[in-house]
Image 1 (cartoon, one colour):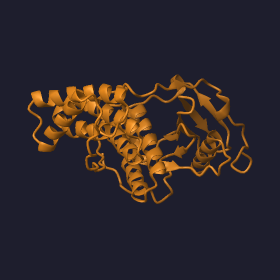
Image 2: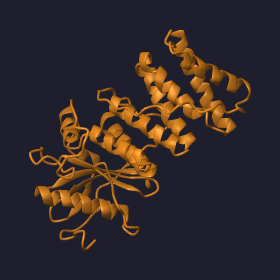
Image 3: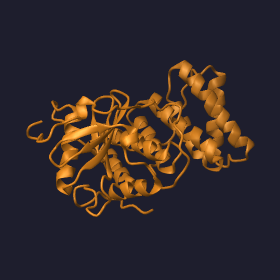
Image 4: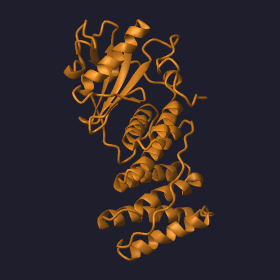
Length: 307
């Protein structure tokens, strides 16, 4: 499947010929930052995320003249909600079993309307302008929705998580960067050991910046196990990887007290590909929202001007 690396000219609207109820997606980060279809919303300091999401999705419904579906991942309450929003502005939440069933064709149609790689391009543009908070929130939203649709082991989900880990590193959040990068490395070691060395190297680069001795020891032991697996399989061909593996051994032998110099940043990449569905251990589970959730329920006639 091919994707454009630039946003749609029509303001990222779904294709007019797309199947009915192509799902839009929204994401609320733990700090309240809100994303709809790969765009960070300007909240104006006063609008609650649920109202901003309903206004944005209602705009799509009015533009298309048809009901629109949306999946909202809200990390402030650890919940995923599924919505139906109509052109008149009315909306309601539905249970998972009431939603249209997932499938490869549906996922392909939704991602053709909102290409993941166009979103990656937007994330990179924010990062190049040093808008690291925006880039990180957009990367988190992309990773969350790809994982929900495709599973944590899918190639696109893995690449989104790797980008998220790199942006956390650039922001100085080395603990989060280590957790995210280790998850990528763990999945890669389990599913495609031949390609795992660069991912273990990225996780090691983040781990090298940790100061907490408990985290250094716990995460370091896992890294050492990964390096030893790669060595036993004859997959440590790069001299820098040998050096990183030795740095992990040395630091653990010294009780995790020394912090080696940081490795060079790793380039952002992305690529398509299917894989089995499985949650990574560090992913906080999302609770499915029940029907009639009040914060996403709106009567007919409500509009952005009256919200």
